[in-house]
Image (cartoon, rainbow, N blue to C red):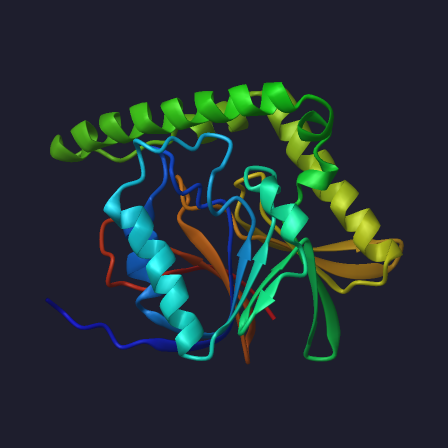
Length: 262
């Protein structure tokens, strides 16, 4: 077994892991977590999928992720659990704190003299807020689609062909999905500007991204940590600014920076 040297990272943000679902890539996430030594780890919502929880399905790899995060606490890593819609039951425990672990609904951090607002994002999703049953049904459908996609990709890899993502193709081909994502980003950015934030970090829509918007002469960075279902991405912050990490499925030992913003 090859021992990987851990990288020190000031701040790491991951979201939408969906532990307890068939689509969750717990093994890949665990491999990634074992390569880093974060000063602060932000779990930005939908880490444990309570909506789709089934006591008959919670593999060892999923439990290993939770155990590893717990072990980080003993190494003086600060861990913030920001609640999302799939783990909204934890919102009644907001402000709970035990040692270096804390449950919150949002997080405001001062990074290089700039104010960063970190939250899950579901509060700006009208479908989640007004039609919860539809969101839950969509969650089950998405999980089945990812499971089917994974089976087909396994067959494609054996034939030496390139992997494909059904959900990405659906999102890219359906105008409504594209419009929803664009509206979501614009709503988040407008609110952040009104509150005087320089950076906004969210998850929820499973679309990893780092970009800078200019609105009415004001610049604001928008970041999305993506997910650990199909994209396998995380946000890392350090001396050089924000970076979007993407887990390399074909070569897990290879670190891959997908995008970067100073």
